[in-house]
Amino acid sequence: AGFRRQRHPGFELWVDSPEESTAAFAQSVVRGLGDHPRWLHCRYLYDARGSELFERITEQPEYYLTRTETALLARHAREIRAGVGAPTLVELGSGLTSVKTRHLLDAWADEPARYVPVDVSLEALAASCAALAREYPGLSIRGLAASYERALPLLRELSPLLLVFLGSTIGNFNPEELGDFLERVSAALAVGDHFLLGMDLVKDVRTLEAAYNDRAGVTAEFTRNLFARMNRELGTRLDLDAIEHVAHYNDRLDRIEIFARFMREAVIELRDLGRRFRIAPGEMIMTEISRKFRADEMAATVARYGLETVRTFTDPTKAFALLLLRKRGRSALAEGRQRSAWTHLATARARTLELIEPLDDADLVRQVSPLLSPVVWDLGHVANFEEQWSIRALDPAVPADFVRDRIYDPITNPRPTRKHLPLGNRAACLAYLHEVRQRARQRLAQLDLDASDPLLADGYIYKLIAQHEAQHSETILQAVQLMEGLVYEPARRREPPAAVVPVDPESAVIP
Ligand SMILES: C[S@@+](CC[C@H](N)C(=O)[O-])C[C@H]1O[C@@H](n2cnc3c(N)ncnc32)[C@H](O)[C@@H]1O
Image (cartoon, rainbow, N blue to C red):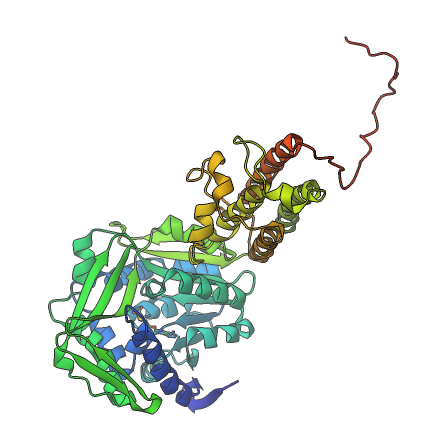
């Protein structure tokens, strides 16, 4: 829905509604400039001029990424073809389809194949489809002028396929966007489809910073073009000569950060939206990030989205890597592991709730001994531990809950001090336990417990969480035993298990 189909000699284009994209550009600019610190979304770097400039960046001597990835594809394209087998190639962010893609298409040339490039830059897409139609007359070409999000749901009907995402474009996503992207990719692929992912690897700062500060100034021109585009499409009146390109490596976050620095005060006015932003002299607006990766970490990350690594190709200097991934099916074994993980969690929780059921609110908040916590602390800590391990450890994009992390940190808060913490009452603690459990369950449903990730393999993390809760059930039980004046009536009484051998109640034999 929302796509216009255009027929051209030798290829077809599906174009997402363009009016929407100018409005979306303006809204995105307002969102980014209204934020602190300010940013602009990198996808808008790529209009027709931006795509041309990017192509020139890839030719700069400092920009080792394209050269290295091209060499990897020249070397391994046939091997990839042999391993994949599917007749359809879908390329995300194809741009002005380069030599790299041609290596893949050459490997596919021996039988009728289909190529589906996807890019937001309509001009670049149309130009490369036209060029490829001339060069590969037997190739069926359908370009999708759309964002990844809009294009990915269309992939299902193209399976079996190889999805390709080159140029380390994946480095433009922050961790939250990366998780969202991988979720969409995983949902778009059918079991057995492949995904070829190109990524730039962590390396020395000089090489990295040189690549984004080429001597010819093309990358600087590329950054400035974003503001030229705003002048062209959104009617702003920015003096481009007063905008400087700044790119440096942030080694804490393993990423190149690119900014536009305003040398003089500037006003960015979006008349149609009635918004005006005053940019201070020296202020920097972030226009792009380019994250750098470690191949094994990426393999562990994608495994959480049901993508297994079939092959990793790297160059001799380990500058760049291509991961060949495959969407895996849920084996009966994986289904069983998921059920078993849930049973571990549910059993431990049933025990905790049963234990506290006979206690009234006053029992739950009092501290019976400096050696034990108020029961509400144990409950909140159980929820917090579960949240940290079953949600945040698996998805770094989920924000931390600093307040609760501090309250339920056993090291920061030794037992005698816990009664002074703002712990909340029974209802608040139960609500916290319940809310975390629901989120953990949603996550678990999406996971692949066959994955090589040690946290997930064989449901490790869920067993850990269940054992942790069982341990706290024991300390709650100790507190219950020390509650003076309490007549503890268990919520349910169970008969002890029947003896396996007949027992004489009068005597015991000690061998
Ligand atoms: C870094 S360039 C890579 C180009 C080419 N694949 C290469 O490896 O040299 C990123 C490409 O992705 C496109 N792009 C950026 N954001 C996009 C989005 N959200 N949806 C679709 N395409 C996007 C850009 O237009 C550009 O062509």
